Image (cartoon, rainbow, N blue to C red; front, side, top):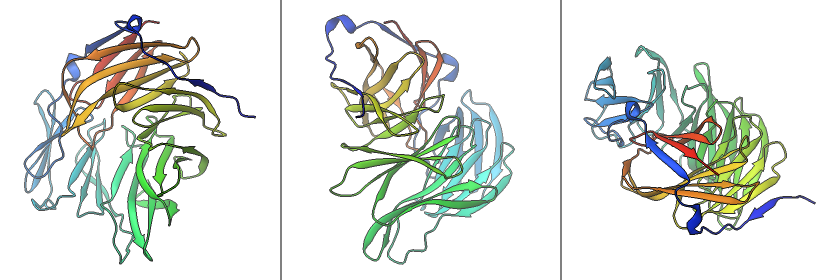
Length: 338
């Protein structure tokens, strides 16, 4: 019989003011949006200025790092997006299914088509990767073949993308890559069935599958590679990676979950709640749940922040009970006292 801890934890007034949230001024970036020609995109600490024939890359301080000649940009390409890497490299998506990968010097490494060649249609190709670009995944969330909706994912190996996932009956909701690039989580769904997370190593070898009875918003992985945290808009489950056993579960009421992560070093789940609308997040709260002591701490953050669909929101551990939130227009430092 599987054993797991199930907590329905209610927030009371004595849990407030036990979390300190501070801005990290040196990391404050500009407004982040999708980037049709002529707009700015902040990603991985850099700003990308797109014109009709060039991509200008600058630090958020305003200092120009480099200008890359690029003739593929079209003002009518609604699929155009730029995904930035920590070293200054970036990936450009254009024309629905095409990706071009550039190094930190602005040199083109490779161009790859992610087309499924389906005659019945497919969705715009998406990208998931870790901040350093160690693992880059291209995926098509919906492919229509023989009247059925399926999906496919490929991982970049050298100058090509190698298929490692295909399902002819389930669509992909999103794909997550662990911060160290070692793990890939594919969240998929099918009408009338539970959502699933299929977990692979960075080479595409399947490790386990987790089923969840609610719409899954995301999955995160512990730094030690032993746990996966699956979350919906109001619930979190923590699982062992090896055999998909649930070891903890808790409800997050009073807001919509944006991100959640489990930190085994402190036996603590940290969640970011807020209302996301038109690239803005408001009424944000940070909530921490210690699954060992069964205690909750919560702190609101009053300022509105900006975010971009092409920039991942990440919870990063600095030390015991001290974390950072990356991916908004400001980096936040979180200190928790239980």
